[in-house]
Image (cartoon, rainbow, N blue to C red; front, side, top):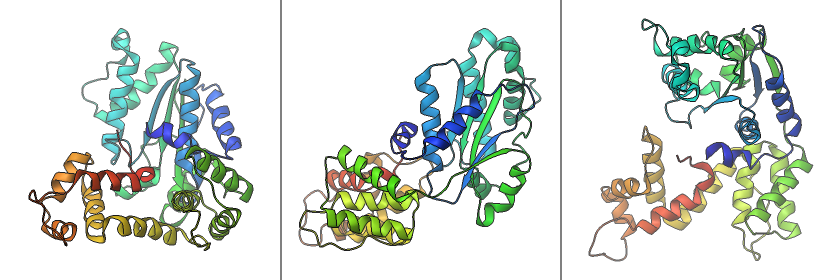
Length: 336
């Protein structure tokens, strides 16, 4: 579901998606290196990889696909958990008919078993494609910044497509990858592409903007032409009334994020929104709407803020408030 939703937002990245698809189409004869998609944060690397994944899912060409969006996919926040979960999925995709060839030696750990099985794939005349988004999140969670576990020379019949931020604290890790791997850089969106994305998203949502409102949204985008900034501007634009004052959209990513939070706080209250988002952030495996409602109902400060002007006989957070919160942040929450 996450990959499908992200793939639907890709606009103007056909050349990058084609480069990734061409790489996957290359013969892997034991000398191929991973393909690294790199660029600053917020340019849409996850969406591009989601589109590549969706393209191969739709084609049904017999390739075994292993995809992980680190930080979003369950069991992906640490290297050991990530590789162990991919090992389990690969065995499931191969099926019991290949169990004799894919039974790894018992002395190997979960991650090592995964790479051992990958080395057996060529003997089965199968192709495996691993799509791994956001290596930088793994770097944040690990003391090892070398990415030594990522093979620079892939086994036969195996392709790896990964993404990483190439600036700031992640630049040394990217440079190490770049010396061995093939690289594709993701550039900033053009103004024409951004306008096309705005039109497509508004049409899908059944909304439209006055020419002056549209001009103000694009003026904000031009100051920080990243995909995430554009997405936040479009989310805010969808809530504009036809009578809304024409003001330029937030000119920075930080300003756009603040505007999204402020809109939710104006609708639902600062105390409620702050507590709810804190609980979602702190939960290790996420929260359902019912669980979030239960936790918030145990917070007296939130209850006092919600029932500031009247007392309900049942002192509990109304489920409608949680539903409205999820609607506010629908584009930024990941569910299974």
